[in-house]
Image (cartoon, rainbow, N blue to C red; front, top):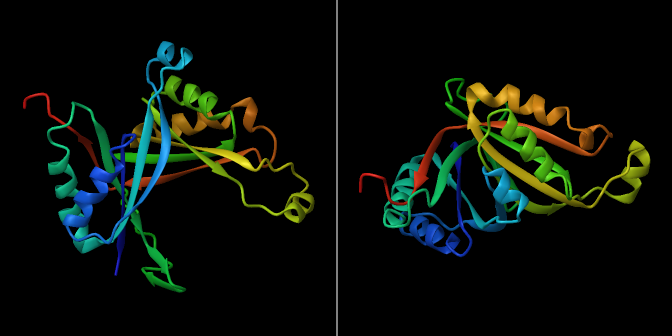
Length: 217
């Protein structure tokens, strides 16, 4: 069985709305994380006018994904324009109660994906620098999640690098045609010159939908 990870990014406090809609469509529930949006408007970001976000992660089997997506879209149809977004990525394997299920050892990414999710994990305080570089390369906005590293002290000594426990995870959805230029812009940041200072990886986005009231509604 193949699985799909549905990811919604909505204003803080609205994560439960997304989760409830998913449960109504047959989901067993999801995980809500708090993040912050980085405005595409450089002036707004400089003034600290940034919005808190809820990120809702819902893992479901492929057969249920369409119904859950439809339920979420319907539940947010009366919210403000550009209320948030909903997209999905393929999850080839799932670990649950010690059992790994799903497709393993196969590349399932669709080469025709119109969008890519770029995930950047950096030491705390550098997500804004990465977003600024990404924006100059054509990206819009992004969402930052506070995180922490899990390396042990012995690992840090063994690999000969300074590991900062506090991290920031930056999520950016871009057009597939922009992926290489955005990644290159992030790669050349001075804050990423030191070993162990950050990583970035990409995942093909299977679908991308803006949530909320449509302009013609």
